[in-house]
Image (cartoon, rainbow, N blue to C red):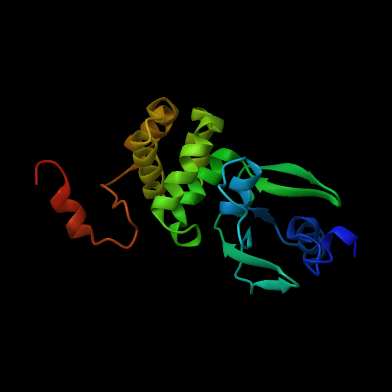
Length: 192
């Protein structure tokens, strides 16, 4: 164990997860708060390393390092980029895929308010065309929520292609909070 990591009693997760996933033959990427940190959009270091995988897995605790696994459908089609670590590279969702995941998994990031805070910091790195493409790998309501939050944050210019995609593919209005009742959402819509 390198001396700088003795207090953790483990290597940092981003240094052992790539080798573990390769050994297990699993597709993965660092996502949500962990990805936001790589893109410079985290207020503080996340307490756990969040890894997106195709099938459910139990969390790993190694010394003071905790790794949680979150199931992500279509994991092979999620855009990722590599970041260097002292022991190789780790796959991390692109800023656009991270933004989509943040609104899709609010329970894993501290709620939609926290997702919006992270989006406000991540927005400058979002490419509008890539954002619309990343949204195609998720349920349409995620794109609706993301577009709404970007507009509320004053980032309408980043949401243009996303808005076009949602308008073409949305069959109904989506509730902002996934757990909210559809009747409440319908009552609050203009014209009702």
